[in-house]
Structures are given as structure tokens and as C-alpha cells.
Length: 340
Ligand code: ACO
Image (tube, rainbow, N blue to C red; front, side, top):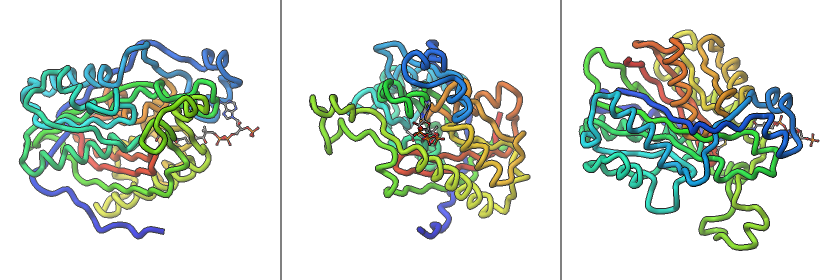
């Protein structure tokens, strides 16, 4: 058991999420469609995961294409031009290619010619990790505005012959602009992150990297697809979502009743409800939209935030807790005050 780290508190000037935008490809893959592809049923998928449908790209559409759509909208909503973005971080586990980075590709597509940036690999924790990373560059005064993109084309690494994984994932993107906060804006208040590399084998894509370069053999063995020990990941996700959320709340002198909205990574409805119950957060203060999107990896949290804003569940001034667990294992939580 690893002892909790001492507090890595946010320092420097206050930062905030200035704008939010999302994009999902129009094509739907429903549970009924999956029933025709593998031995499964709508009832099993709905009961075990909470998912009804997911959005899937058409051939030729890549992560940078989804990310671009969300980024362009987020920058416009922030009242900025792409030239005003100083830094871009793209959380993704499905980059367009190994290199150049998806950040480079998105920078070019949106014309953010004065920004530098990189991709961040943290699987389903990529959005919380990227948000914290961008916030640090704004907090220390290096940039006034940073772009955070969480985007994944999970359909590009999913084995549609493996019923234990293919029902879970979808494609999508979300983007936020993180800016220096002024009075009356919201604020990114605190964060907490962990990795636990012992969890690597439980959720990974074994081939295609330097350990097992793609070959006819790796393709024949279907090793270029996501492999997962579902129950190991499930148990870790419930335990860690609770643990990291509680640690962040405790450190800030907060209880579950102080949170206006809890936004967890959307991997499985049962993971979210179990963690929420253990934390003692009122279920009415939780957003679950996995039914419509499945697990979009780096995009789930911005997609959930967007639904919360659109449905009136998230308002200016609300105290929001984000939490995520992903392959690695990676774990993250961010506490923030919503600004619009
Ligand atoms: N349809 C029908 N039956 C199925 C399906 C399916 N799609 N998938 C599995 N089953 C069967 C299994 O074969 C098994 O049958 P058996 O009992 O005859 O052997 C039975 O259902 C139960 O399987 P379990 O794996 O025990 O089912 P479980 O309740 O654990 O649910 C699930 C599986 C949904 C994958 C769950 O474990 C889960 O959600 N795990 C976490 C996923 C997750 O959080 N991923 C992390 C994010 S991904 C990232 O970071 C990139």
C-alpha cells in the first residue's frame, strides 16, 4: 500500500476553465448493432455497463479531426483567436500516429501558430492530467491561455470480435480553454494524481509499440487491440475513485455535501454509482451520460460537463469534483469552481 503523497497544491496565480466544447462523430453504434456482431444482448450491456449506444467515426476520421472540432468551438466560446493560445495539451491514447503528436496536428488544423504543446498519455485519466498540466503553465504566468483537448477514437483499437471490450467504448472529443482567472471567474482549486504501474497488464494494448512491433504474428493474434481484465479494473476503479476524491475533499476541508456536481470518468455506470455511494455524495449531484456515449476515454469528462451545463445541472459558482481512473493504472481528481 503506497502512502498518500504530500499535497501537490496548485500554486501561482488563479486559473479557470474559460470555455468548454465537445464533438462526437454522427454515426451511432447501438446495442442492437452489436447484437449482430458478437454474442451479446442489449439487456446484458445495459445491465452490466449502462451503455445503450456510442458514436463511432467513419473510416479515415482521426483523433485530430474530432479534437479540432471541439478545439475550434472552445476557443471561439472563450472569445479568443487561435493565435492567443500559448500551449496545447492533447490527452489521448489513440493518437493519429506515433509521431507527429496529435497536438502538432491540431495546432496546424486550428491555426494556433504561436502555441507549443504535446500529447499526454494517461488513458482514461488523460483529461484530469491534461487539465492540471495546462493549469500549471497558466498559473506560473508562462501563458494566459492554454488549450486542453481530450480526444479518442477508441474504435481504432477495439476488437469488434471481443464481446468483453467492444461493447464498452465510443469515440469523441472535448476541449476546454484554461485561462488566468479574474474576479468573478471560476477557479481550478486543487488536484491530486497518482500512477500505479503494477496495474499495467490489467488493461493494455500489447502490440504496436517497441515491446512488440506490429508484425503478421501480432496482427494474427489480435494483439493490436485493447485487452482488459474487466473485474480487476472494475474493483480498482471503484476503490481509487473513492480514495482520491476523499483525499482531495479532506485536504480542502470539504465534505461530500459541499460538492455541487461530481463528474467521474464514464467507464461503467456501476463504477460511478458504487464510488458515489461510498463517498456519500447525493446521487442527484452526479452526472452520468455513459448511456449515450460509452467510454470515450479522454473525452468522457468534458462530454459529461457539457451535458451538465446544457441540462442546467452545472451553473456558475458551483463546486465541481472531477475524478478518473484509467489504464496504467492512472488516477486523478481535480476540484474546481465553475465560472460560466
Ligand atoms: N455480452 C454478454 N456476455 C458477456 C459480455 C457481453 N458483451 N462480455 C462478457 N460477457 C460474459 C463473460 O464471458 C462472462 O461469462 P461467463 O460467466 O460464462 O464466463 C460473464 O459475462 C461475466 O463476465 P465478467 O467479466 O465477470 O462481467 P462483469 O460484470 O465484470 O462486467 C465489464 C464486465 C463490463 C467489462 C466490467 O468488468 C467493467 O466495466 N470493467 C471495468 C471497465 C473499465 O473501467 N475500463 C477502464 C477504462 S478503459 C481505459 O483506461 C482505456
